[in-house]
Length: 149
Length: 149
DNA sequence: TCTTAATTGCAACTTAGTTGCAAACACAGA
DNA sequence: TCTGTGTTTGCAACTAAGTTGCAATTAAGA
Ligand SMILES: [Mn+2]
Ligand SMILES: [Mn+2]
Ligand SMILES: [Zn+2]
Ligand SMILES: [Zn+2]
Image (cartoon, rainbow over all chains, first blue to last red; front, side):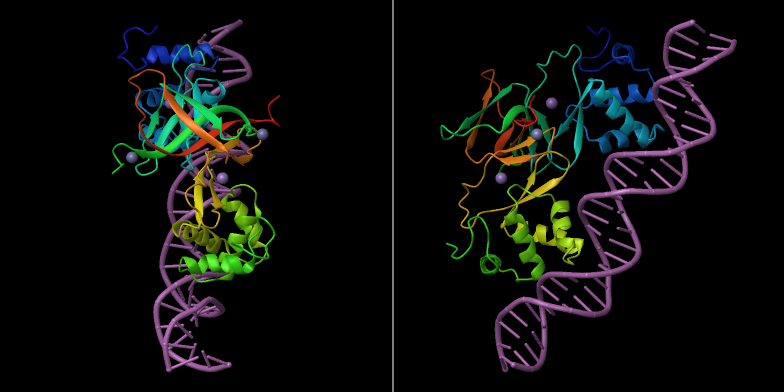
């Protein structure tokens, strides 16, 4: 439970404790990356994180490395949302696996939405249709309400 | 209806007629791209097409341009399958829209499978859950049967 | 405070994809 | 079949994202 933070905003202290919990050193770059991801309402591209933090003097290689490390540590998920760019999303604290959810991306405006309230069902049209594997992540592309005519 | 071709293989003549139907000139590069996509059993990355055709002397810029043009002409769909690489897939002749289907990509081995026999249903967990837009393309990621332990 | 391994900034590098332009080409019409 | 014209190509140079090696800096435990 985070105290003193605005809703949806990690405090400096909670960002630090989240790093310590996974055995990573608390560095300015990692904290900045976590806070940048936390401030965003949708998954961010690496370039977006770089843009948002380079102006504070962080190097792009540091940011790329931080994103990779945070992902390997399980604090951040790396999403492949299908516009030829990777995106990173900060997992909620005490992630119990329930945070997996489909994502929607608008093919017109590029907007990405977390479909946290949705389940996905794949149904074979014929009896013999067999799924090619075990589903772990779903991406839906289409036209968002703003872009649908 | 194509005559004289092996199943699933476009003849030279049918590749040409497909180009003429959409008002494009029949050039060696475009025919080669169409045949390369046709020979593949799964959507191809631009790099894959480049690799398969560069050795015959085609330039990579020509191949990239051909893929874009074939896509704009509606002969080829461009899929964004979520590994930060675009893929291209030749549409079947007399495409009636029924060729839209979900795709599966294995997060371990990268294999891509066309899930032509499947429908996707998105169900909101609560009554108020509203889809963020109109679904047009679905990608499922996961572990294929070969890679699942 | 000191020590040491982890992390950073930098600059050079890699690789996919794009672009401008002159030469080559497809094809409609003669 | 030949020709004229607009289209397409190959080339080489370029752009932009992401990666890498390494010396300098820093976090954190002793
Ligand atoms: Mn999400
Ligand atoms: Mn397909
Ligand atoms: Zn939109
Ligand atoms: Zn696999």
